[in-house]
Length: 459
Image 1 (cartoon, helix red, strand yellow):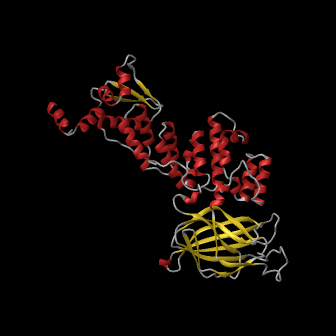
Image 2 (spheres, rainbow, N blue to C red):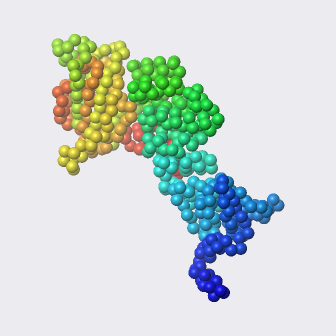
Image 3 (cartoon, rainbow, N blue to C red):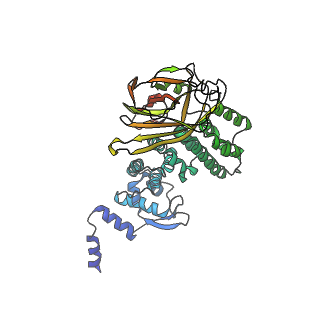
């Protein structure tokens, strides 16, 4: 028997292996943990725990030393056993499923090595599904670098984050951080649906009835980060209004903005502040504008029969953010909306005639125009146009007046600041588009706060 016992020890070639053998064999264990809600028994050795953690040292050696079994109700047995294995072997057993719990245990028992390993693992393995759980842990432990890294990842995967199950479990402070970071990067419809879902869960946590009044109350100031003015009007009428989260006065204010975007919509925000609008650039590819080519063909204010489509081919010298169009106006100077259907294709030259659909959306634009008869039609969500790539942009007037103005003398290239635009031959005889609206597409994003509105690690 003695020889068998010795042979078993000969398999333990390292200190880590010897310690792991002591843990798994439960030999000479002198402390008992009752782990999880089911209070499953896990045994360990005081000397190992004391040598690895000042918290355990205080628990077992101080004047109030524990003498009975120790209850650990807040973690599962598998996670606690993984924690003990690190204490015995110094080898982490981190996975996406247990990393946040390992960070919690490392913080709770002051195990600095495991804390650093857990933080590094969480940063390197962030996913849209895990981001909310990580953000909550980072907030709870005041880990500002991890918080910033997580918010940046959320900004890059906003729609998926808003659909993740972990969103419902965020505290109010973390939810406000997410709304603030993502509000200008995701569809406002997605943000509204996420807010409704989260507020319902928060009402339950606070023991409140799930009513529109209580949901609005728990959302708090974050409610005004939802960009209602940038929503699809149909979604607003069919989904937002019946939710009763807005007052009748607020309904009227936002609906008025849909009809006339120059109306004051505060305290609600739009994707573009006045400061942002001042940073937008406009480029036109016509030499001159002429007034009414259509006067002899139609009555003033007449609507077209059927749909009319205009198009353009454009290539930029560097990456830009595409915000919308300058449109030839109808000449109306009172509130009237035009409905446009937009398609943007990216032409991949190395694949011959292959085209990839980059954007397809409907937008409403006011008929109010400037002295040259030019009106603006802004996209609900801007998109990037990569430098050196050719894009084919099609705009279809689905409802509204024919343009009263037009342009003559198409330019082949236009330089605006540091960006040069090259225009291809148009294929449509219609004249709806006079130019495009853009901003700098570099990481600083031309001053527009449409990307990373959080502090980056190390900066």
